[in-house]
Amino acid sequence: MQALVIAAHGSHLNPDASAPTHAHADAIRETGTFDEVREAFWKEEPHFREVIRTLESEEVFVVPLFISEGYFTEEVIPRELRLDDWDPDLWDSDGTEASQATLEAGDVEKTIHYCGPVGTHDAMTDVIVRRAESVTGDPDVGEGVGLAVVGHGTGRNENSAKAIEYHAGRVREMDRFDEVRALFMDEEPEVDDVTDYFESEDVVVVPLFIADGYHTQEDIPEDMGLTDDYRTGWEVPAEVDGHRIWYAGAVGTESLLADVVLERAADAGADVGAALDRTRDRTDGASAAGD
Image (cartoon, rainbow, N blue to C red; front, side):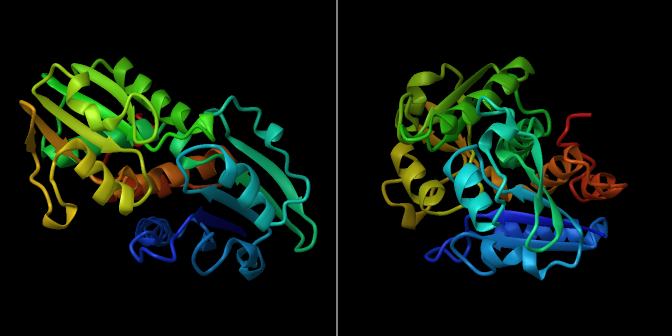
């Protein structure tokens, strides 16, 4: 038997924070690929600490629904899952290359395949592009358009910026958009000045966040000048300093992200069978792996 655990942050304050996690888990559950599928959270129930003990499967694939490698994926989740032999060096990553590490959870007699976060998987690049297609309603969006990939950024975790820059670079290599920039909330270059970084009249802004919440629905729209008060909403596109800004919601709410979760598990050795085809059917045949 094999089980999938999707590990996410959750929130005590925002009831919508866990909605994408539950939606992606439901989509994968419907494929019947895993004998058991569980969601687990840091700030909500069920908590990371109990989830392994609720499973009957001997093989467990844990996929963190986080954007970057760092404190939560390298310290909090392994500690709470009681992965005694865990060491971040097992991922052999420079901040964007974590794949998986296989560990034994002796107290519950299970093999745990601890995967890298979804945010640094190559397939996430395709989810970002899909988000741009969704917000513009144009499946061929790119020519004459700029794309901003926006992350939180923080001086406390250099990997936070690496994930954003990694995907911005991969989109740039597609040669699909006229301009591609990585912008941040808490470090330079800042999203507040988004129009300073683009010559294109149309600019699509995709926040690389897992869930919509305070940052994506309040901070970023006001910082970019889409609205003076987030409570009154904003237009899409919105006119700002001579540019049309197409602001997408958090990339983690895109249904194609379920495909990335499956890709992570498959990379760790999970038998996903035809599940990827089924989730691609749900997402209009798109492949998050780009094949």
